[in-house]
Image (cartoon, rainbow, N blue to C red; front, top):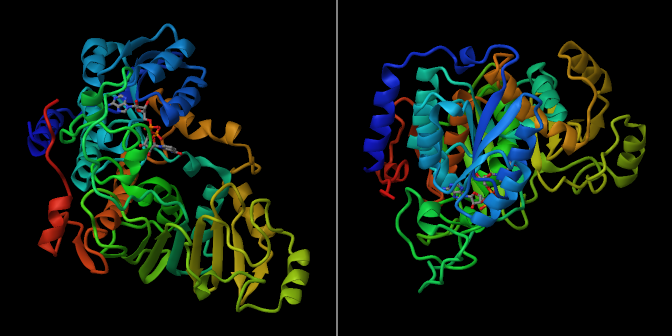
Length: 474
Ligand SMILES: NC(=O)c1ccc[n+]([C@@H]2O[C@H](COP(=O)([O-])OP(=O)(O)OC[C@H]3O[C@@H](n4cnc5c(N)ncnc54)[C@H](O)[C@@H]3O)[C@@H](O)[C@H]2O)c1
């Protein structure tokens, strides 16, 4: 079955099934039986966070690597184990209440859609999908079936990001006209596909790892684990890795839809790996929180971000004198948090909002946002206290162990009929589409591509071939 046929069949199944939210099935006091697809690395973290909820029973574990599967099974010996998620879902069917997908990106949609077709709520890792068409389909099926869904952007539920969202929406820097966001990470690879093949490790089912992607010989060190991120067929480069997390707060705070144009300044494509450095410029239609249009620039790769006047901090190059800034930072109640190298130095990763009434710096991660006006930090402790109180944010907890599970527990609670998720596929799909448009623009370096959200097509027809891809029967 090719991908279009697969997506069509998913839509067909969903079209007559206007079911109430899956939460109807879980009366209070009932437990949630979870099935986990991909349990190594992040999948292991996901398993830990989900199973830390007091109403969860882990009933099924699936991984194509028997070593990772065995480790997870040791922690949940009562769960059934599988190599193939299709077998797991077919055999366990009614005995699973919710599915967690933590595989490499190219398997997110095939695994999630199969589960969603069976009316299962899904927690899927970020980015939601590998292709734009898949993302649209996931949004559509989730909506038609009214399913509880959540994308794995756990910092979405952390104090500092919720605070920054509310501060921006309260107008703390006025209408925002530009966002600059950056990460020096580099999930790129400038080389040809390797020649020859290596023996597939005994613990790995390579055919199942490839899944719907095209047949390819196994090579040590290129794909499993982790390095698939660098490669066109499986991952989404640095945009799909850090980009999704760092885009999330500005995207949410400014209530953005998908962009109108996108341009990626990067090296020429090599047909195998993603560029090591990307500078992606988006133009978004305006919203109630932005100027008429919003410009958004993303920088990734070694040395990023470059020097730019929007990114000069108090005490940094081209700003007021060091002494003046030092005095200022001593006075400033919102002192520079641990992790920021010092006055004038940008955090390694983060986002800068530039508005009519100043700038707001949001370091990544778990640090307070900081307001800058005319080259000086401004004390916003009063605004922070007010916004925190009015929205019941509680105190900042800078502890990943305790903050981390919140996003997962929100999903479990929503499945059990309590509250709603804050990163459902209706939101995550648009955010992912935005990310993927920047990824596709990397195939056309330095060219501005024009996106029509309604038809889900580029005006530049040659770019449309990258919106989807064929699915292999496996
Ligand atoms: N939210 C976060 O902070 C965060 C952090 C890291 C990774 N991630 C996301 O988690 C996902 C996994 O990343 P990772 O770093 O764990 O990758 P990884 O390659 O290290 O691990 C993937 C795991 O999935 C298994 N797997 C692969 N194909 C499978 C299949 N078809 N069925 C079942 N299991 C399969 C692998 O054997 C391995 O155990 C990615 O989507 C990534 O973007 C999110």
